[in-house]
Image (spheres, rainbow, N blue to C red):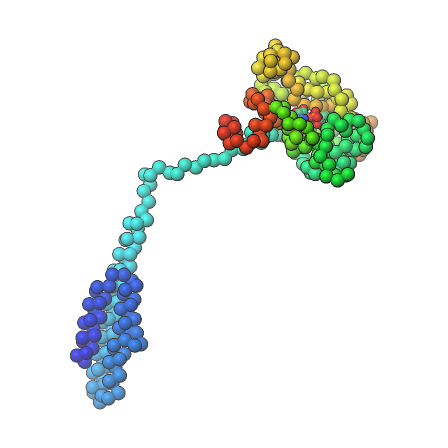
Length: 344
Ligand code: FA5
């Protein structure tokens, strides 16, 4: 029994001295474990008489209870200390300046596309899409450009197979949209997208560039609808003081066809080096949809008329923001793009 007292004393001292929960757990295992000294001391019980067993058993139990209680009390103290230490170590200084977050911005061409889309969505247009890998059939034949037509050379193409190519313009979306409407007007769509041509890259030409196609089909559509629409667009895009002019042109899918110029940003029509002293800069091709194209698209040209246009967003960005070279859009120089960091 004196040994049990000694064990209890020793255990309580070790509990008191434990500096962490792990150390405390080691003490628990040491004294209360199956191979601990109390268990060991209890082996003597079998040699004791009834009285002695009772007295020894009680003392052993009391010793165990005293050690357990001391362990639990110390555990609470250590847990609290540990929490305090953790809170201290993980303290957040809310007065520290935050880390700088650099926000990405939309590429300028994307910003311009969104601006153009906004203008046309405001006039009741919807947005259509078509594939970049296009069939010769939609890219040319449905647009009144049968095989061997000399005007195919106007857009030198990247062919993938004899029948598949990278689309040279967004006009095939016109044909695809007409088929979708199954001869029933009105149609009023724009289609932004990438196009590809075997053009030599220079300050105003790229072999991959963007276009936005527009198509309107309804009864009683005339050239003045086309003119009014594009004049409204130009004023919204470039400013009230800007004027447009139509020049006769040729596209096999429109008749009559025009090219549309806007008064030069720099001289507003007086003539300067930027507009090569003409006062105007070209922004798009357009015209009244050719009856053959309407017919192939499933529309009755006796009942329906339409206009279409195709513009180059890079050229529009060049004009609007005074950019000197179209290649700036594709060299991935972030400094270029960050000049146009407007909130959208
Ligand atoms: C066409 O592509 C016609 N599909 C447009 C059209 C649609 C006419 C509907 C009538 C009706 P064009 O080849 O002119 O037309 O190109 C249209 C616009 O794309 C040009 O005005 C110009 O802004 C832009 N563009 C043409 N080639 C390039 C190029 N290599 N790099 C950058 N922009 C270009």
